[in-house]
Length: 441
Ligand code: SF4
Ligand code: SF4
Image 1: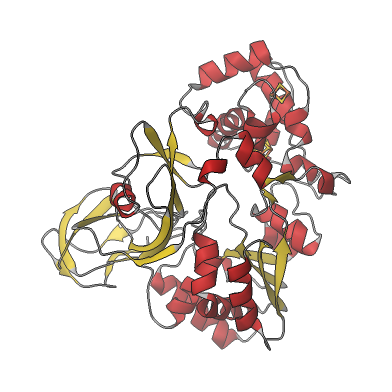
Image 2: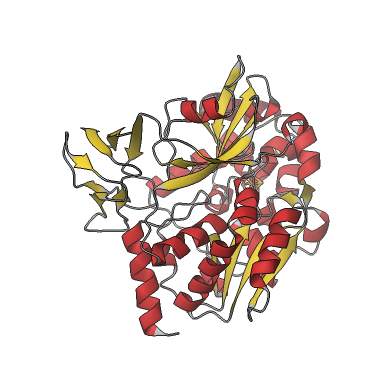
């Protein structure tokens, strides 16, 4: 590893506020500080109906490959891989062209199954190594970076901070598409770009499986990838509004202990001690079972809930609640190395089958890139758009700011990154959670 290049790239990422753009939000300068053997650019676009990465790889292939080279340089890796689904033909062609002649760089084609983009599943698919229980890809000498993060690394080294986000809008809208928008744009404004949402629909930030219910006033952050509009009655909405009391009572009275949720769990298939059927049993019936600790190993992919369970229970939400309680109580999982289940290759769930099961096939359409959106009159910039401590405002109400100016510094202690103005404008409000910017046209 060249220490000068390492320091230069890390410093540039920190200054530019680069964080994991695929949903994780982990500060990139910290991730790239490690010395590893392989960088994997994650272009698999894990969740159902998320489209922005395949669009981005087709239009920004040059910068993405450059970002991959920089990540390889920063970490002293032997090479870099971009893992994407075989069906992303345009993206594949564009990336192949940019990688031609670059030694140590290659593409890895994934089959179209869910959750192919889960970090641990991806490490297994690309390298054959199993990330230990409660571990990270780093434990296998790998760093995984979303492809938009790679793009932002390339920009950071040119001195360009993160002020925009690529986001797709899909589902019950007139014109599904992908746009580049300033951070702080509301979901409502994004829906307008797509011709508006139909009546009787709900918004989900993210994909159909792992996304969260959202509202029109929510702002785009550094981790927003997709806005999905679905009818209230869609099976993917099932159980999202139920209370934990309802979910656990239903589990106690209805669970067949059929084992299907465990059988199809991607983490169980990696050999991890995560057995959702036992967690449901322990939570519903009580007792001194050790199974609930396994909730700490759950990636909340939702496969147990939206595909496996024959009686409509919600093991994923039970796991989430158990995990939150355990973490609040300071519990840690005593992880160990495992071997993948020999049946793993036969239990992959094709995305298309899952899409039909959830009544989503009608929305399984392209969301082509439609360009850069004009900023909304006001932008709401959350101070916490990343894992770690919120950024600390460095501007005051009434202050004029210019595009790319730092408006909030990284917290002095703990993980953090600065926040930059996406546009020229005036600071309209500074609250404990956000800076509101009035955009100057
Ligand atoms: S959500 Fe369900 S299927 Fe997914 S990792 Fe957790 S227990 Fe396994
Ligand atoms: S799949 Fe459903 S019914 Fe079967 S064990 Fe799991 S939660 Fe219970």
